[in-house]
Image 1: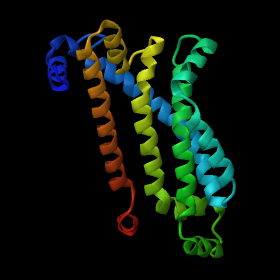
Image 2 (image 1 turned 45 degrees about the vertical axis):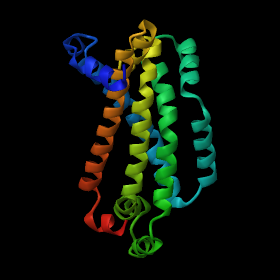
Image 3 (image 1 turned 180 degrees about the vertical axis):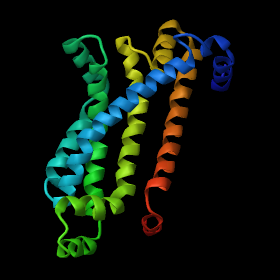
Length: 222
């Protein structure tokens, strides 16, 4: 049997569309984990990246932190947090946030450093404060790169949130984990397909957000 047969069988089975183990319920759980993790990572990474990029300091420290964060194995960190904290959402959120912070942090910093210094100097000459310069002059120009960092983090979170199933939580990872234990490869392939489709949908959402939030002039310049 090929993958296409498994996909057709999985999505054609009406039992996969109802109840607590149905696709809508598992998809909602996966989205919940992903949105919470992305929000936490953005709350940590964006302010630090934007401020350090604005002042042009701490780039080496950020690169070191990002390298360390990327080097940590998400599954190993999940197991460690599960041993230390027990069941719950927190042991899952920690590795997801650790995974997502580095791309947001580094990309935000680089986005601010890539802004042409001429309008920034002009804004200072006009007496604008640093916070106004950051949000009104630099951030609108840096927004495409900032969104690319958030997009990268979101894709990594969605792909990795399947690990929640290993500590008895839900999400699309349930199909993969349960399918492997039950030797039900229809479930495994179906779950993997859903994760891939959700990742592609996330790319589309960020593309639309970029078209809506980024000014046409900045898009043309990029």
